Length: 66
Image (cartoon, rainbow, N blue to C red; front, side, top):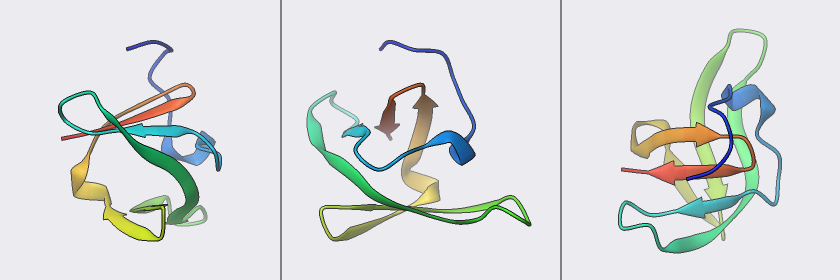
């Protein structure tokens, strides 16, 4: 893993998303959340919704799932 841990509010479309085994599963299409309330719902990756509970770690420039 590279990059420092960051808030979900900094995630941008195009960041790579890695599965629990370290394999790349796609790129962020959209971040699902409410910035005003600070509630992170998940990510849209390749047309699939990934719920926030599956996100293990957010690092600068990449997402890692559990």
